[in-house]
Amino acid sequence: MRLILTALIFLAGLLDLFLAIGFLTDPATNGAALGVMPDGVAGLSTMRADFTAFFLVAAGCMMWGAWRRNGDLLLPPAALFGVALIGRTINLAIHGPYPGFALPMAVEAFHTVLLVVAWRYLPHHKLQEIAG
Image 1 (cartoon, helix red, strand yellow):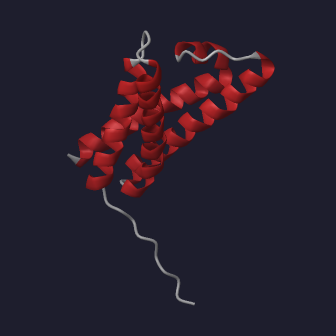
Image 2 (cartoon, rainbow, N blue to C red):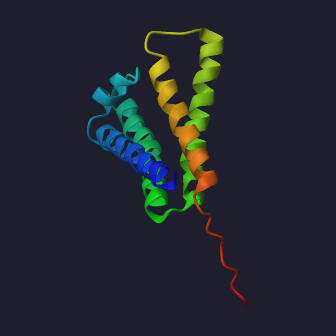
């Protein structure tokens, strides 16, 4: 079970790494795929910074956590994707469905569930106290 979870997390992390690179190099095209359109240079800058940060931090924590078999490193990306899923759910409740709404929600739900389940199965590394 641990091997399967670790492999799934690493593969999902690779997907997120490619998304981060895509937003860093071409935010307009990658944003359009998610339904986000920049408003001038400031919009491109915001997309390049924020989406790259979101996916790069998530990918880094996921891949490092999978590699080190450290469940604690999976909590930050679980929180990122969980909050994103909550935001989309609130939007769905307020504004209703739109074309293509299900895929990003499914990806975020998959990430969140996978990371929380793996967090429960993988070891947790406790901080060592330094005796002063």
